[in-house]
Length: 62
Image (cartoon, rainbow, N blue to C red; front, side):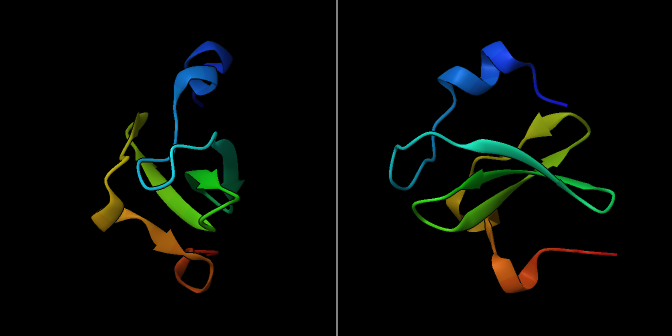
C-alpha cells in the first residue's frame, strides 16, 4: 500500500489532478477520477506513465 503522505503529493501525469489508491481483487492501482485511468502499482512502486495506464474495462478483476 502507498503511504498516505506520498499519496497526497502524487498526481495524475495526464491531467495533474489528485489520484486515489484502489485495490481490485489482488491488484493495486492509483486511480484518476478525472481521466478515469488506473495506474498499476507493481512491487510497491506506482507506475505513473501514461502508456502504462489502463481503462476501467481493462482492470484485472481476478
